[in-house]
Image (cartoon, rainbow, N blue to C red; front, side, top):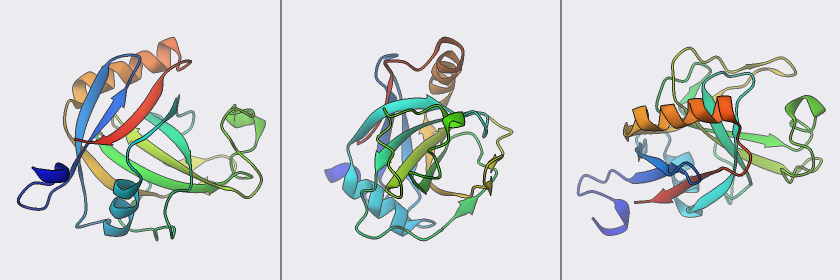
Length: 173
């Protein structure tokens, strides 16, 4: 399996919470979101502070400076992600700059600068609705195929115990 691609062309990544020592494996949905998958794949590995969602419900995510040469279009969109979905969101700093989000200056947000949110949804009943801006469709670019139960337990612990000092990582396997 050269470069994490199977003979069928399927590519896989590992999604991990380093401090908690847990990881899951996801396949890229190249057939549904080819431009987004290419952008993420080319940028790997990616690691940043993890956050637990306030609005979407059962979601953990990390924020990154824009990494694609050209921002992918809204391919394979959803506002109702299911357990195991990996989603891609693109924001500018002013969209996430409200104090209500709680990022402060540590998230590297600046007015107008693009920010990429890579998210993992670990349980059901998610709705991508934000009180400040309304519907926030995400691009579903990956699906967890192994280890979701263990990752979901760690995500629940993140919600209850806190995210300080934890990172969310994405890398080729």
